[in-house]
Length: 227
Image 1 (cartoon, helix red, strand yellow):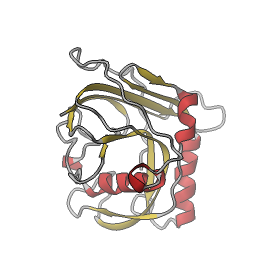
Image 2 (cartoon, one colour):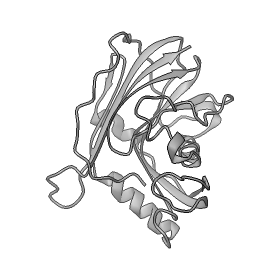
Image 3 (cartoon, rainbow, N blue to C red):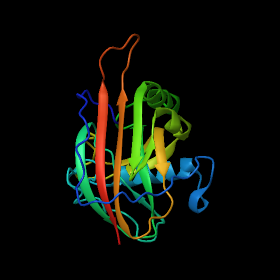
């Protein structure tokens, strides 16, 4: 479950050598590669949760683990969040793949919230993303602001995930199968031609009536080398 109390940071600049190559993003109403956006989101979280903490692209600050667990046969390459704070990563991606970008991701499982029903997991994830106050995505020279990204919010039904037995992510103490529900704002791009791309995305959450202080903020910058 992605919910940490952190201070908001400005995103660090990505490598100066990176170009302003851009790629378009897909409509949330479509079925990229034969799957709905909801199905892509479920597959994304299955990937995230299946990786041990020490190998997780989620906690990787440099991008060294960005390809860990990615399927060579998939048409989509997943980028990661960071659980809050600022990350500046460099990642090599096979040309011709689309990027899956978690601008504001949220999931909760019955291992992170023990004894919760599916309805309760659904409510927890919804309430979290109802509190999003800031969204931004930049791909090369293409900018997407809060209003542009609102239509990319998707709430999933329940699905099955499996935490690794050793060193599971998100503070889970015992691996194994679990039920999950996800919410949030997710982007899928068109396939990447060969080149170098700068991807920057951030989001913030402020919970409570009359909230005056950000509860959570993530700022993620990638230099993507498609080859």
